[in-house]
Image (cartoon, rainbow, N blue to C red; front, side, top):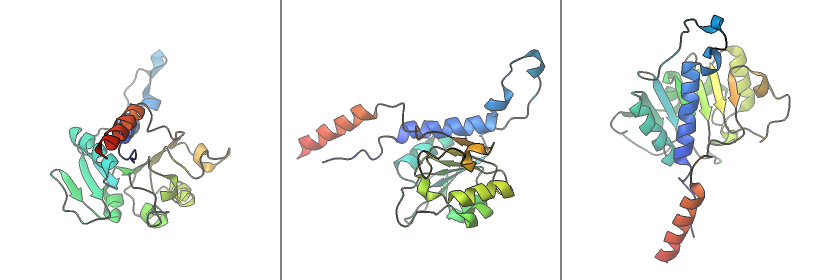
Amino acid sequence: MTCGRGLNALPIAEFVFAAILRAEKRLDETGARSEADWRRHDIGRLYGTTLGLVGYGSLGQAIARRALAFDMNVMVNRRTAWDGERGIAAAGIDENFAAADHLVIAAPRTSETEGTIGAELLGVAKQGLHLINTSRGGLVDQEALVAAFVAGDIGSATLDVTTPEPLPDGHPLYTLPNVFTSPHISWAGGDQDQAFQDRLVKNLDAI
C-alpha cells in the first residue's frame, strides 16, 4: 500500500548538521560558566571542509543540500554508477574516508553493506575524521571502531545507531570521550506521522 521511505530525511539531516556544528564549534567545551572561562578558544569551521557521504538516497541528498549551503565540499559514494552533480563529486568509499573531515553513513543495511565500515576503511581515514552514523548500527564494525580510536586513526564519532540497541552498560563506546552516542532519536522532531498518513491516503486514492 505504501511505505515511509524518505519521510525522516529532513529531521535526520538537521541532526547530522547539529552534530557537525557541535564538533566544529566545540560547544561542549567552550561554554562560559565563570569569569575565568572568558578566554580565546580555537574552534573550527564548515566552509571549505569536506563532507563524505556513504549512500545517496533521500537522506544523503538532504544532507548534501545543507552541506552545499555551508560551502562545504561534498563527496558521495553510492552503489550505482553516477557522474556526480554540480558541486558534488562521485568517489569511491576509500577515497571518501581518505578525504572527508566529516563522513556520514546514509546507506541502508543489507547483506552487501553489513559491516562495511571496518578496520581497513578506518585505517585509511583522514586524520581527525568525524564519523557520523544515523543509518543502522550493523554497517559499522564496532570493535574495529573502538580500536581505531585507541590507535588514533579517527578523531571523533556521533552514533545515533549501534549494535545492539541499547548498548549494554560498560560498553567502550560509552567511555570514549570523543564518542557521542544518542538513543536512536535523529529521526524525531518532524511531522512524519502526518506525512505518512497523507502518503497512505494518496496511494489509496490512486488505486
